[in-house]
Image (cartoon, rainbow, N blue to C red; front, side, top):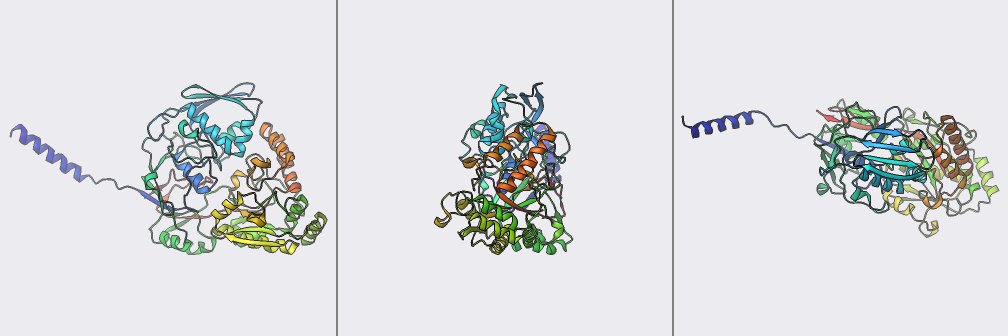
Length: 524
């Protein structure tokens, strides 16, 4: 046998060997989120689907674990000076952007600055930051004007807006301008070329991502991508999505309506999941610029017109899945308190009518916006309308889809000219647990969220909370902020509830994190 024949024989043998080993099939996770992904900038947008998109493709300097502790994520080590004024952060080895370039300290500084321009916690942090300086490619220094306990909790903030790290060239864009470049360093890569809003968003595993070598704990620890591809499918018809899950055509539904849970629970191939450790809080958002709610006395009447149980029954129904909680800063968390709650949120209509009369309410209609497409919000406005009318308000309820509410709520024009007075929303409770992280409590006038509450006394308390380090004093400030909220009424909180998700039982590893995240999720 000559050399050519031997070579040919070896090639044939190799080909047979290769073909005898089956190729690994690509693992695809198909999911339906609470809404369609239309915006990809999680700093510009507060939409939860955009936040969760951010968690897939970006990483954070710090993260919140299952015990509520702040733990390093992209950071390897942190040094704090003895006077508490200088924080030095060193990034861990192996951090790269999806294009292979290394993550640098300058990238992180630019990302913090852009995030802080949009976020209420970031704004409080930057008010006490003297400078941020890169000492070398992996190390940067944050210098404070005065000691504060806010630095690590701010950088490890788990909810909207999350301080995600981006390349400097992207993060240099103004915070009020949407970015379109989705380059990140996280465990998944967004396939922008396959994105079809209203149809599908696709993510693929980042083969170069180096997770932390430690167990996952809520949003902290090792983020391991265990599926090759994730497809976010847009299905606005809840029954269609549930039928697809039962048939095995999709793997996960983030927000099936409560009245359809029984259908899912009867199927032995389906598991029901609670993926938030604190759930959500119903909130009555108020426009402080226009009549009648420019009058604090009229706003005060809302505390006596409303009760939480009616709202919770209308949306959830099952008492096992909701909680009546008068504490502003979320029951079961550090700053929860019953101070000032007596007599409020009990639908005392006589008291509410007396307050309206005392405040001089003249019958100006309240333009109340009703979400027509989000099941956990659709039934809230009719309950508010009924209770307010029993208390003596006139209410003009106007139904529209959620995106239309978002657009309209950004307008400061009078209600009679196409503006608004109030609407209801159900934000994640994990962002509402203290006076600074609670973005709805932000009462900084033009810098506040839509509704534009303007209260120097509340902002003074929030500033004190941001600067304080003593746990006892922090609790005292939080109590004072709650009492001020009851007096001044920036908004009204209307009970807590937990979203229940559904998945096929062959999909495992879901984390109760608050945001819906897909690292460590495995499909068998």
